[in-house]
Amino acid sequence: MIKQAIVLAAGEGTRMKSQTPKVLHSIAGRSLLGHVLHALDSVNPETVRVVVGSGREKVEAHLSEIAPDAIAIFQAERNGTGHAVQVALDGVKTNGNILILAGDTPLLSGNTLKEFVAAHNDGGYTASVLTAEHPDPTGYGRIIRDDEGLLHKIVEEKDADDDQKLIFEINSGVYIFDFLALTEAISKLKTNNAQGELYLTDAIENIRKSGGKVAPILCEDFTETFGVNDRVQLAEAASLLRDRINESHMRNGVTILDPTTTWIDDTVTIAPDVVILPGSGIFGSTAIAAHAVIGPRTTLQDCAVNCCATIKESNCTASEIGESATVGPFAYLRAGTILANESKAGAFVEIKNSQIGIGSKVPHLSYVGDATIGEGTNIGAATIFVNYDGVEKHRTEIGDHVRIGSDTMLVAPVNVGDGAYTAAGSVITEDVPAGAIGVGRSKQRNVLGWVMRKRPGTKSAKAAEAKGE
Ligand code: UD1
Ligand code: CA
Image (cartoon, rainbow, N blue to C red; front, side):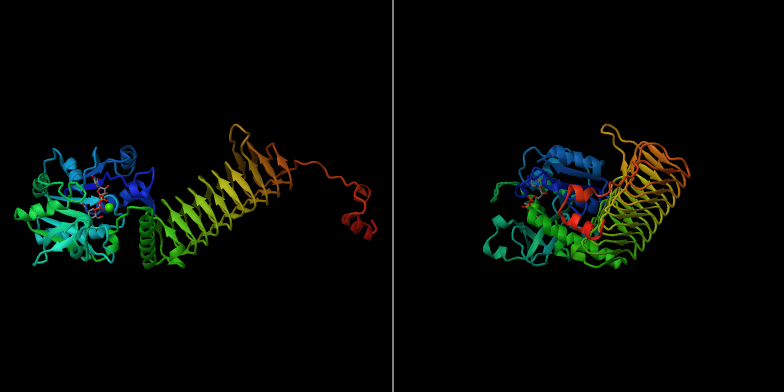
């Protein structure tokens, strides 16, 4: 659909006051730059050039992760958007259309880009600029149209007179140019403006003066052109994106009871008939199947949740939750947890790198680390899988239909066979064979009259004496 694209991402981002380059700040599971590149995918550019400068190493490392085919171009000194394009196209010989975008406009959608490209092609223009009617145009370049409604020129805020400042139609910073017209126009840019920079926006006027036709193409939804320059705008962009993502899930059949407190990354997939309760965050590569109920106040990062599972007031990372399994309230599932169908991780339970078999339950107050648990097994309250000897981690294997007594310490490496029991309060250091009960505690003895002798006059002693004991 489009041959070439350039993303401008070399700016300092000074107003972010951050050690992280501006375009690497994240919202909804992607960096600002990642959002722009994701939108760009929908018009299938053959070549994507990203102009990098400030924080170059970090931006290039990020690019090699998210867009390994993109070509990073280094702009050593930041002399304006026109200069950035000159650097990007230095020595490039091609023809056809070239799309130019800024790396700090994360709300631009792929759909809008497609419509923009189509409108440009249909009109047969030399160049087109995506514009928007902004309720507060302060800071943006203003669109000056001619009598026919075509683009006369763009005036930057700092160069605008009082009348021009009253114009609400702004330059989004997204352009399509005919390649040859662009290279000629940017070779003539001058720095005679308020910022002493080479403005890409001046290329428009140059093209018009050489007889080219330039169109302003209005984007219906001005929020798509929202640029992020500081952390206040970052938060505004995040909430706009949150609303957009939530709305699209709701239109798809997902119940989201309180969209203002529900944060879902752009990268998450959710089937219809999932219910999400207030205060939940669903992030990364998480995928949720139909009829699952998530929340309230639940965080899922990179999890697979199967049909009909419920996860209440819990925090789960890189875990798989089986069909009709139940989690929480107040469970903490760490990386590598696999809960099979109909299993349970209950209140105040932490699980890490462990498989819990079909229908098995860890209902209360336990830590399960580096374990495999069979089917139909119950882990009594307050059981601890003692997986760490201070130097190394060890595994525990528990069979099918096992009953681990409450407050058992399973000192790994250790195995408990099928159908075996452990006595409550045991410290299990040796394997328990199938069908056996492992008892690992001292025998109880009662010292009669101890309280009356050792704690005379206390409420306890009086309570015991009243009973005549
Ligand atoms: C620019 C436009 C303005 C438009 C606005 C939309 C110009 C002169 N002005 O203004 O009309 O309304 O975007 O958001 O183009 N960059 C480089 N190298 C440079 C300078 C900038 O790569 O030397 C990059 C920045 O990293 C940024 C983008 O270009 O991603 C835009 O630069 P910025 O300084 O933010 O321009 P604005 O003042 O916002
Ligand atoms: Ca900007």
